[in-house]
Image 1 (cartoon, one colour):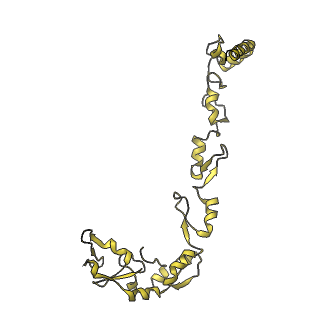
Image 2 (cartoon, helix red, strand yellow):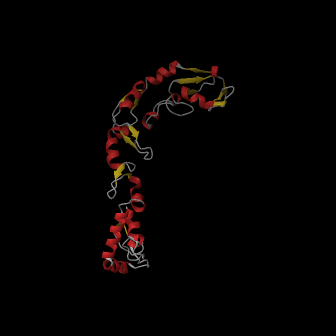
Image 3 (cartoon, helix red, strand yellow):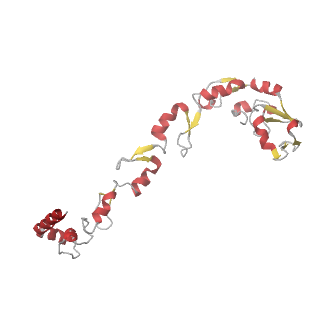
Length: 244
């Protein structure tokens, strides 16, 4: 991994020789080149220009370097580990200060450590201690129950869900302008045979089982017909039940 990231406060007072020539972070596992420059051990592969010969090129002076021309600098490593720095979350309130050798151990347990939200789409970094609150109250990618259909929906999609697909969301019939019809019931409302939309005409619903009234009727005409032919329709239903 690349070098140790530091606060500007620390970076401004630490000698520039302690910083990697490639990643510009505080050297981690310092390696020195034959041309006198320093790199983190993990940054060396980024210097390779020829994958067959594994020749590296120094970013400082463009010197070509073979693997045997780069070596660990143990003295530099000891010096770096003894440098005193602040926690990188000092500006968030952390008061820790100590040698670099203890920095990572502290960072792994720092109460001000910021970690990514568990929902990749969110991308927000939050303090470890605030993650639960973020997930319950702030994250737009958490699941919430739709107040209409009771399904679990990603919060960022809730408006789109209710505006376009929620079956229990009340909508207006575009044919008769009746409001408050559940989206999932709209087709039933507009059904020309069994629906009750005033703007849709259709035959008697009993025409499918023998009612001779096959004309296209308005809702008003259909209601009048159903009242008038109640007895006839009852007989048709009884006959249907006997047959089946």
